[in-house]
Image (cartoon, rainbow, N blue to C red):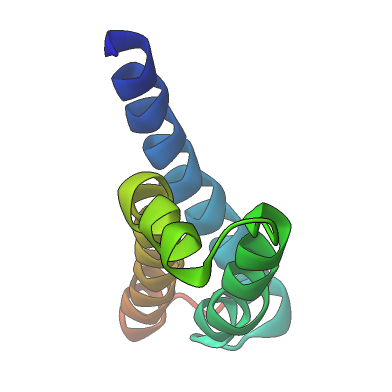
Length: 99
């Protein structure tokens, strides 16, 4: 039990850092502030649901699995993508032309 809690915590932190970094780099290269957030919502979340979906069990059981285990990393990923957008916006308002 303790091992799974530690894995969930580390995975959640990794998702936040990963999507913050990816979002920050995409914002620097493409110069769109909120595109990484939209990409996460429309591409990453459906791919994760499709990958972990078990067609041998009922829909309710699948959703319960996602609600119990998968919600923290998903929320951390969207939080990282949003935070990267806010960081880029703050840097642009601060006068940094590179961002």
